[in-house]
Length: 388
Image 1 (cartoon, rainbow, N blue to C red):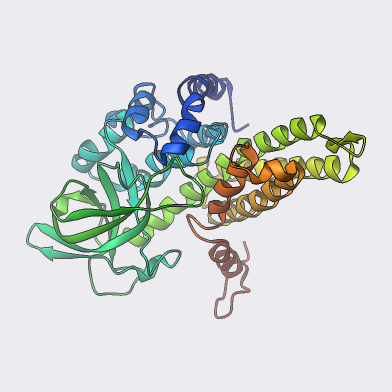
Image 2 (tube, helix red, strand yellow; image 1 turned 90 degrees about the horizontal axis):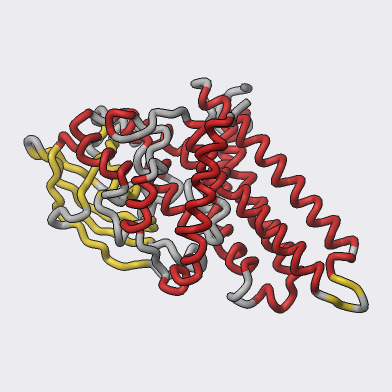
């Protein structure tokens, strides 16, 4: 069994924290187009939520990945997508490679304060010309003695306007594109780092998203995570946790919208009966709940495999793909049943409709997920594949 009584104890603490410290403020943060990341993360760090599966020697709890997966699922109870996404960047997108491959020195400098909530982290992979095509990034980190000199830019960076450091993927050599990249911890206050603008997004309004430029930014080579030239490999490993996290965070969010839609359609009357009494409505909601449970089973299976040390690329990719597709179908169907109210910004279903759209884009678009799966199946043109 993936979850135990120990998981449930942490789950209850997290539920209490979300109900008391996050959800009462979500509407305010959505209107402000930002939430106070340092304030919230410090509270979470003090309670141990930011390092459940991180090393004990750097302030983490040293638990296995199942605890991180449980937390991701529970964060879906936050009544918006932006805040849980920002938390996920801190715990499961910007720090896994650092925790696994970083030197003790760089982990003390960047991981420990990220676990305690004293630092806000962001992950710098995507660029204006290289989103899902990670191998095509142009940002460079040129060797100069004991330093790297970084030039380039990153786009769509969650937490970007508030972050203290960025886990940056940059080209550190001229070799093959899959073996010439490194992950580097770059302080956001370093000379030459510029937050060019805060992006105005369709959804995820409470999460700040930035475009960032690097102009001759000098950082010591000791800030590199692991070996030079292994950055692409490290990021691909890191992506598996990111994609599983993204899928798991959808579960309770989807269930919340289903339940809100049931309540609204039960009380809304049309043509002499409640909207919910129409077979097309209650059948569709039953079908959607079934789809959520199927997704949960897939995510839990992937989580068990990851804890067992197995390669979960296939399962995590499937989960990410399915979560994005389901989010689009589910929120569209539910919004339809809200009628005109669903088209207003004051209802939870319209927020979910906007926020959930990112799941099919961020962390690798649906089309990239399908390419990965087809390559593993041996059906992608030019690939021999893997039948497993």
